[in-house]
Length: 198
Image 1 (tube, rainbow, N blue to C red):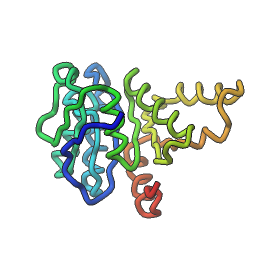
Image 2 (cartoon, rainbow, N blue to C red):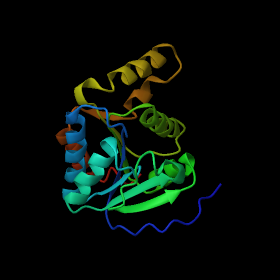
Image 3 (tube, one colour):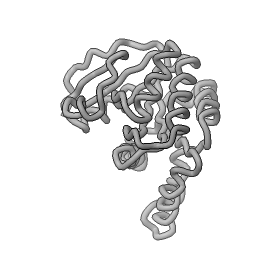
């Protein structure tokens, strides 16, 4: 079903979508990494597209980008406005469903970064990788794997390959960086090599 028209302001530059957690009950270094990531993408001239919340790593990343003078677009379903506390200092689009949120985040982004998060983040990245497996897109996916946060997920994917459920080549569908600097360097390389024209 086509989406309703959404008045997102035009942006003449690349956009990175961040998937991450909304929980406040996490280590402070996760919050710092999210804020540093937001500031870094803003300083590099990227627009940050994210889930629209003002809490958890989502809020930290959005504030980091906003305070660094960057463009930020938050996309949030109406029913989550109270739970994830809409961050209204940035451009925000309120949609009707989770499906519409994810589709719009995808449509508005050139590359995806997956930071630590919970089951919602896992659901987002699994769908994104499933679309990639089905050749519905070829946009880059980067995991921010702080302290091996995503190692269990990667182990599950390797197990799926070993059991014949997933082709081995699919393990190349994403790249992994252990810190924010590594992610920002990867984004810079993609921009320089036109890897975003997908």
